[in-house]
Image 1 (cartoon, rainbow, N blue to C red):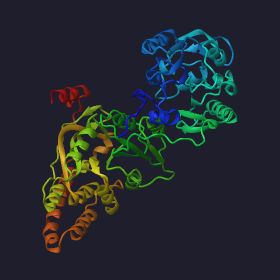
Image 2 (cartoon, rainbow, N blue to C red):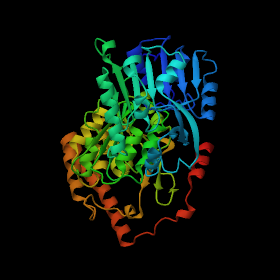
Image 3 (cartoon, rainbow, N blue to C red):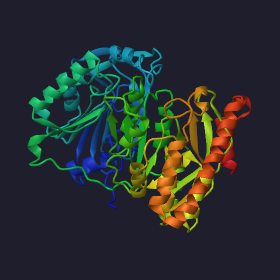
Image 4 (cartoon, one colour):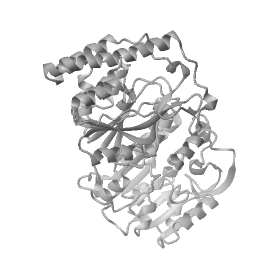
Length: 530
């Protein structure tokens, strides 16, 4: 694995920025950058790591306390200066709205933020009058020469005004990064935001810039005349794992799921999300998190698919060594992927690895007790199949799997009740399933109605299609004498489950006593003690 020359902070929003900068600038130590809207010089920064390797940098930050933090962050970088001024299209004084990293000169932007769930309440009405200059004047005052390497503009909805006060055709920086959110789910229908983005993209195109990279937050523009051919960004690793997230109308729970992916200690993964034509705010949460995952892709279904087909859509084209599904109402503890992948890497006989888990009631914010299923770790594949049939653990479907046998199983198993169990049984033919003794998986229940076991079509569970599958599966994967001995045992295991379900319908149990169940704090303490 190639070692990156640059080391962006963990909060950097542009995926693989180290690879992009090395492609565009090489291993340069004497470059020059300017960042407008520096904040503290580290959080979400696209430049702090350039200063660390010797670049000359000008940070422009109008808020005194933020500017001081920036100076402290770069105290050892002798080529860094901090200009305590705001940038606009004309000099004078303007009112600035404080809101941490969302501080802005745009009152309209603040009003828009107050209508967005993830930003609502960040601005508490604190305002100041501050000095403003044009970018041209600030660059000249700080002796920044024309043709410098990198300009970053991140001023929360005031990017157009910054560019209006900048003679781009005179200074011609090689690369410009601008925060443009005209593709962002929260702003793409906002005429003020989209018009400003059109202006900036058009202005830079006329000056000879081309788009090198674009996501829902940032666009990287490159001066085309500086490169005969635009270099491809450098890849330092190919991910070993794909996280497939199928969702439909998951706005109530998907943020927790995505946050748990972002918090994983294991990092060699990419993410594929299939949004099944959601009609709520699901896509907004997805867009917020996409930039945190290298090479993440989102598939927006235009027509509503069957749930099983949407699951399959999230795995299409997977080329990584491992694959794992995460339902939009489930989530992981931070070391879930690390534990599972480590087990698979250590034992080639495993096709799948899973952990202990707890049901989590989203509506009550309570966890149920630990559930642990059996390993199917015998060298005898008949025994492995029987274990999976007798211990029907649908959650094992959400373990980490070797991609080839897992995708093969998905393609071979049709849509019927117990299809997730059928897939784990199919995997048992290919190898072993290890259930690890760690409390790391959370199986979410979004509302009490989900406590009732229903068929895929919402009616009563249908057992016959699964029974027919078990017969066909046995005949296809084992010699006839062995299959004839296996089939009655598999059907007997299914009848045990059917009787259990019928007994539960005849005498429905009361909902859990949520007050008696552990809270998040108690779970954390349990994990620490363990």
